[in-house]
Image 1: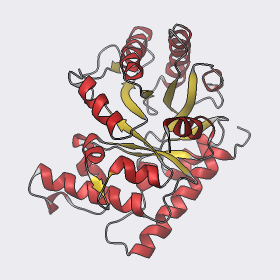
Image 2 (image 1 turned 45 degrees about the horizontal axis):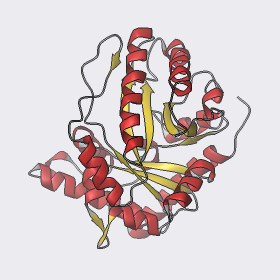
Image 3 (image 1 turned 60 degrees about the vertical axis):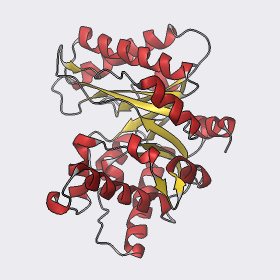
Length: 299
């Protein structure tokens, strides 16, 4: 796929984006969910080797194709690794799946009800390397815990600063200001985030487009103005701690939003499964998430 074909697929393709980007802090939890207990590795290198094996198994599965999975978000080490002897982004592209990379370095401590992203001093080098490997875009995550206007505005401001850096490098940013679905002020946080994102999108210079990765709103359809915004290439949804069944039910109430699930995609996969069992389980998850992304229901 050429860059223009990737853009078309992401902008208008039927399907969803797989989030295969668990990083250092979340890797042990992801491995435990996969049936690999914490004592199974003796150092960080072995731990990342195990998670790369899991991701390779997913990517090479016959169930994982560009027909329903239009994109995949990778962790930096996964991007730099290989699948069947090929650079991981190339392996994805050959299956019709558009590669993205997670670029944030984790979260700061909470202030004003939010967690901003930690500094990314080597971002330009990472973006250059990613583009050279055929990566189409990036993903960068912040967290919103409370409906604090000052905090949410700071999250959006930082996200768009990074987005401009990504766009300047020739990549498409996925801006991810995650609203904690367990927040006691979730509905109001959703509303403030909508207002702040709209202002930032309206102020974008030039004619570049960004993507948004958002928690499924408590009020179905709330983010429709973002789906329709001329500066937004696509709006994708994170599962945010929902089970796959619950995430798919809520996503289906939001026209124009497609999934970018991680835990909800992987929750039934175990490393002890046979090849057929693994492919069948992954295929079932893909079908369920694809349906919620493409077939919408009344709220």
